[in-house]
Image (tube, rainbow, N blue to C red; front, top):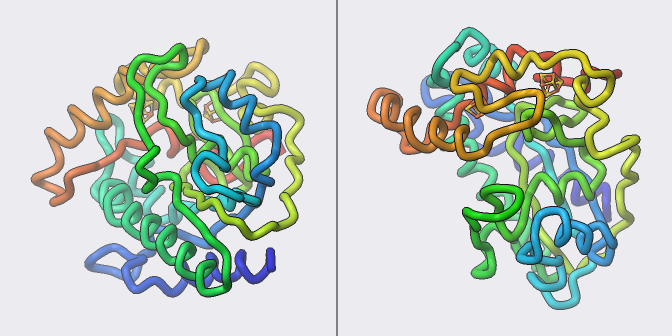
Length: 268
Ligand code: SF4
Ligand code: SF4
């Protein structure tokens, strides 16, 4: 069943009619990565200490939860290239991926709930749960009651970075998501040495390229200033570009492009 579900996610993204820029055949996303973690994995309890007591357990979201299914949708090389030349604000292609690509990510969540349901397994998307909430003042800054990146880490898909991103075998430029299901699946091995080991800075103290890429100084050798980042991502960038690009959300992603971890694990 693991391979069936993985293939279904790959098929869905590969054949989604909307998976391309409006005026061209350039895809938003390339082939997804998929991983599984056991709902009973103690790591979800640790997240309540690391992120905050408000972070939900799989069983809080779905009674009888057995597996958290995570995926990573790597942003295509053409979209990444368009953002590499940007220095202050994201490219139009990046902004369209943030808006329309995320809609496809939502379609995938809904599709998997239906697909699993047809096979007799209950499923929920934490992102769409009434229990999903955002908290602005926590010891780790702005945080939500379910972190897609932490779920992806639990499912062995990568590690965190100096820029607060998530570096997978296909790099840091991606969108990710998850559903929780009562279907029991074999968990994917977490092969990384630590939760930070894919980032060159944490590996050997080198790199730091993302620091210079951030136009508002939100990344330093001490980490990522979420509030400063959000001012650009949800404030300045949409204010300046929404009308021109025709989308409400533009993202930014400058720290995810023209960096050694853009499309690979740079440590390997
Ligand atoms: S650019 Fe370098 S320091 Fe920044 S997240 Fe990527 S690997 Fe880490
Ligand atoms: S997303 Fe943009 S504003 Fe936020 S840290 Fe990265 S480069 Fe800076």
